[in-house]
Amino acid sequence: QVQVVQSGAEMKKPGASVIVSCKTSGDVFTGYFIHWLRQAPGQGPEWMGWINPNSGVTKYAQKFQDRVTITTDTSVNTAYMELKKLTVDDTAVYYCARDMVWHQIRGYFEYWGLGTLITVSS
Amino acid sequence: DIQMTQSPSSLSASVGDSVTITCRASKTVSTYLNWYQQKPGRAPNLLIFASSTLQSGVPSRFSGTASGTDFTLTISGLEPDDFATYYCQQSYSTPYTFGQGTKLEIK
Image 1 (tube, one colour):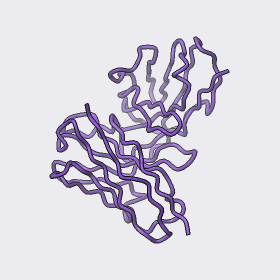
Image 2: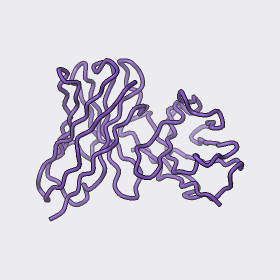
Image 3: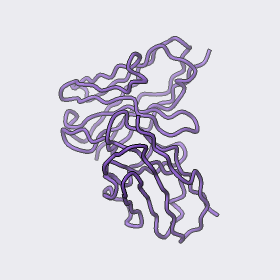
Image 4: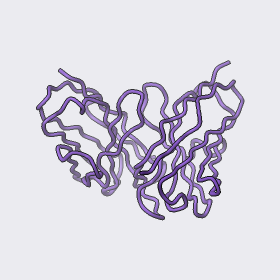
């Protein structure tokens, strides 16, 4: 049974950075792409980027290109998403999600973490 | 970016009813269209991928169809557990984008 566990909620001030972690278990960590998404209050999900844990290759949405960094530590089966220069508009629940197909990018978000609430406020 | 437009934005129905939610893509997404169900305070749950393939464990009352850039999610015989918000999402090209959601409420 695949499990996805994310780090806990955080409160940040505008201009700060945040790192959210995402640990998967129950399957081969390097076998599946990991995506990061966010969902602002009352809005639909928004895709931020993906990482191939097997190679470290990443792809980011243009909107976040200059502020987001996604990495993995394969020794602990964990992915990380760092978002810099936070503004109040970055207040959202941040999710990591595992893609469905072995060693292929499909954009099918099969397994999700519970989400991490990031609140940005002065 | 590919825009995904869902309709209706909200829908009231009764247990046992059948409902259809529509999603239109602003340009071709081939059959790379996925549907998710989300309940308050929970992460989205994948129901259907590749337009019409039912995810493992999802009841057969859920079905999806595609016609060009128009896609539908049908729930045949609503059960109490089905009242939630539904999102379509294209995985044809990045950035992957979602519709604005359809909130299905009990009448």
